[in-house]
Image (cartoon, rainbow, N blue to C red; front, side, top):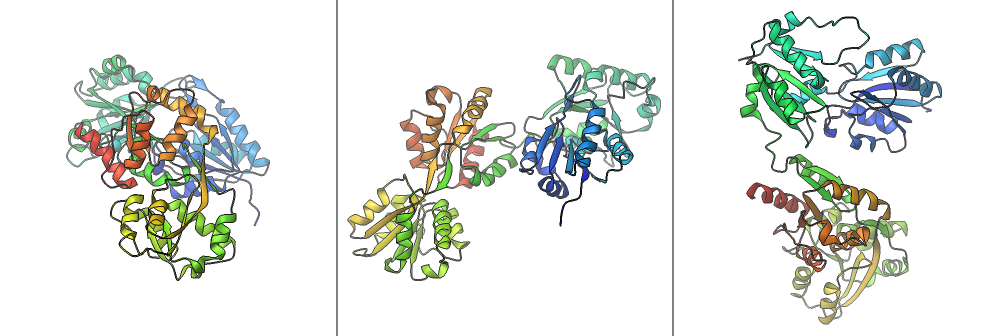
Length: 506
């Protein structure tokens, strides 16, 4: 069924990309055009890989595109037959000018929908540990713009009733007018010692919270150099932050962590680190592609009946061997006579997803341990196939061959250097990171190639180096790096835990 032109005014949420609604994510995936704001997190754009993306962000005193031109752009793109997502920070109808845009769509006869978002007015205080209402001290709350329409002849804010009639007041976009706001509230009856919080970049790892009162908050903000985007919370509920501050107490809060893992496999690692408060940057130093020469693996697949064991040393080995086997018209039944050995829980899970339970998985996730476990049986004349990367350590096949086994190592995938990431990688490192993670020897070697001719040691001089296990750590040391973090169990979950523990204990 063909798509019908339509405009969706979509709330992007307060900043944390995981606070996006399910409907908003679905619509981004269906959009032809995404017209987005300054406060829409860059992660959200990845949900619209096929869409044309147009930035129309506005910051204080700087407008990429004036509002009338944004309105005209929405109308024009819809009239051209496109499905348009207008992605707006927070909620489109809470000081987001969504009402104005909707009015223009109505005038032009354009079909539209409103998709509410979580407004920063409620989410940002929550991430600062400040409930806007509380039975003990606040039964009412008001949301107020700190930046009224400059074309209005007089303010529509009733300062007297606002100051005296509401327990909690939340000002959006008001940092630039903080002295005026504080003075107006005091002038109309709010006590000078009323607690005030100014929260910048709320819900993100960059979150900053400044606490004061109506008498001193403007001076405190000026001395700190606090700038937008920020919201202001006025009221006794601010005192509750002392006991309810949960986000900034996360073990990795505000830490900037560079992940070098292949993009397809980095999702779980990013989510785990972000859940602990980290700001993650994904710059894959390796790109995984199928083997260029498929003849050896094809020959092995056609002769699977001759093998006794199949050994997998990585998740990618399972994935790419399975893809090749199925592309040749075979399925899991072709493997029914084989025994399987794996290194690591994730590799075992990848095999289980194929309907195969591993026969052997050593407690220590390294090739030497798998070899030792296999050597407990008589391997003389046993036929073993090892589907793996083109460049990998030979300790496993060599050990098994010495024990009398006949081993065929077949390349099912290769790791290449993604040269297009070089500029972005150097920018992120130059801006400052706290930790860099390495999950394989290849990630270390490829990073060195990407930053060449710069020296890796100088580049990462003040950065904590976290390696998933001893083999990766040895490679890092070969390049002169100091390894600061390594888990005792060589898994992604254990690496995340080790990074968190490092900062908790330091």
